[in-house]
Image (tube, rainbow, N blue to C red):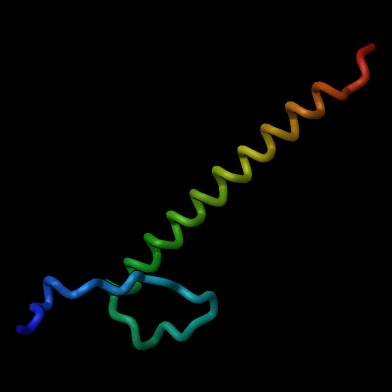
Length: 65
């Protein structure tokens, strides 16, 4: 019994910074751009969460005048 192309598990798109892009199609490049934009959003959300925690901690320990 053979597996059709639609039933085969799809490889997860990954991108290695600095990798050769010359062999990628326009669609593959678009997919990698979307992947990197999602990762940037995830990193930014985590940075904002940490900054908010830092500000909250500073406000608790800041000397009151």
